Image (cartoon, rainbow, N blue to C red; front, side, top):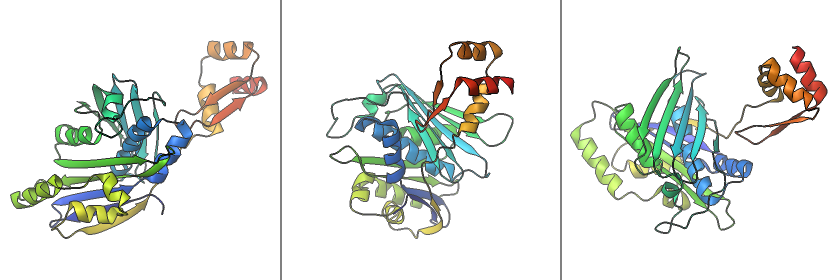
Amino acid sequence: MKDYIVRATAANDSIRAFAISSKDMVEFARESHQTSPVVTAALGRMLTAASMMGVMLKGDDDLVTLQIQGSGPLKGVTVTANSKGNVKGFPNVPVVNLPPKNGKLDVGGAIDLGIMRVIKDMGLKEPYVGTVELQTGEIAEDLTYYFAVSEQIPSSVGLGVLMSKDNTVDCAGGFIIQLMPFTSDEVITKLEENLKVLPTVTDMLKSGKTPEQMLETVLAGFDVDVKETYEVAYKCDCSKERVERSLASLGKEDMDSIIEDNKPVEVRCQFCNKVYNFSVDELKKLKRK
């Protein structure tokens, strides 16, 4: 089953909800960056969240970028999603090894203290940037805090990545539940009760629940109305042409210095680790453009 997101409403449209199965995109990221398990979990949670936040965007060309900068050994993670929910991302440090915490991968320890930044590029002169201090470094709680503080939207975010014994991704996914301003106290109380007894995201996925069934579990007692379904994937838009444009934009002194070395140049994409090679002759042609 391919990765996909469902967008739904409940309680007479006073709740909006998103849920995702993201195993394939997280496994692709793991393979591309050769990440250790705790880094896979951190990067996977970020990709999962960004994908859902991407489909919240209105314009076809809108983008959302999530960045975490932390004082822990992982240093940080950057991911970007478009309005179709397709994502790409990279960790600052791909291999971090920490002992488990309470039997689980210690994502919070890998990130530690720091900030979360959400950048929305919606075609305006300046992108929207919201920055909050990390609350736990576990990402879901940090995003819940971000939505409340920066966007004034009461939300609940659940994210999970479960690794197999061979360190590949067993399952991954998550949900985002948000309350509209007119949500009644009764609806809020019922939702809070559901969240108190909610299984973890990985427990739900491991038991075979689909994104639709995850939302039915989170929103038990409400009529869930699925509005749209989106197939999503890890998609990097790098190309040799884009790299050529980047090289061509270098200053004359920088290009002269590279050419004078008289060695081929290797450029590696930060998001997917694909390598682009340029001969000295190709570099000379780029300089003349």
